[in-house]
Picture 1 (cartoon, rainbow over the protein chains, first blue to last red):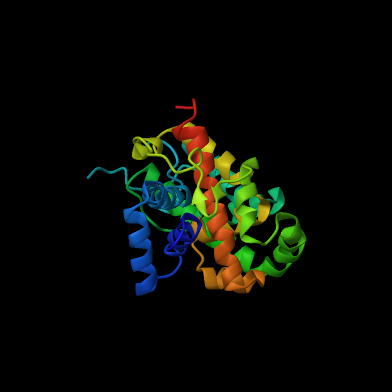
Picture 2 (picture 1 turned 90 degrees about the horizontal axis):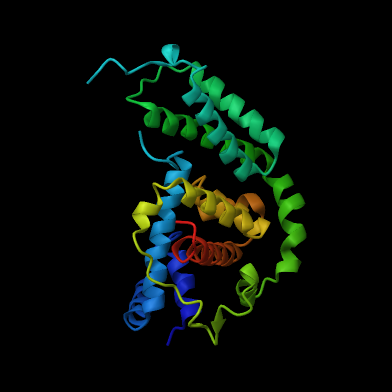
Amino acid sequence: MMNCKQATRLMSEELDRPLKWQERVSLATHNSMCVYCRNYRKHMAFMREAARRYREGLTEQQD
Amino acid sequence: MNDARSTGDDIDWNDPSIASIRRDMLRFAQMQLRDAGSAEDMVQEALLAAMTSEQAFAGRSALKTWMFAILRNKIVDHIRRHAREISRSQLSAQDDDEGEGEDGLDMIFNRKMMWSSGHWNHEDGPDTWSDPDEALSQKQFWTIFDACVNHLPEKLARIYMMREMLELETDEICRELGISTNNCWVILHRARTGLRACLEDNWFKGDAR
């Protein structure tokens, strides 16, 4: 059974490479029982969006 | 549509809003390069390229995004030219201090143990963030975001920014810096986990907003 450290590692890697089928299954199983890791994944998506805005210079209220 | 669309020729380069874009560009370049001289050069080159272009814009934010795209390309070229020096001078020296073991993650932000036996400690487990989209439009959020990225150990910040802000593929980052793919993923995992914890502590649970 995958632990949180391993799950977060996969949730980081899925931003860099496609996960294998087995990895996706293990991660989904872990996350179905772990609210912290479900939150972690949402936060990763948020941070990616923040980085995109940062990169595009959109770090202030839009005019 | 109005007549505000402009070409490179009639952008007013002395306009205060251009000065503020330039200031933001400089901040961005300094964060990526950690070298004031090179950052200044990159911004100058980007501005020069922008001034001589014929590109048309629908408003200030479109102009800014376009200027940032030019700047990003200049910075990527610079990093590609200087990758060997960067990796020698700023990255390798720190390898050993931070510890390459998985447990290096635990030490980020002076948290003794973020995990015990591989599971989140209750006080460190990711919380629900209220209204994250709203954060993105708050100036103060970006100040904290900057501070959190800068607070990461240098190597983590560098590689995180190469991946997320300069949008390089991990393969290229590893190759340029001469580190293994696995090491690259370990570093990105640490950087993201550290940044996440910092944003949670200082923005989502903090007093800043």
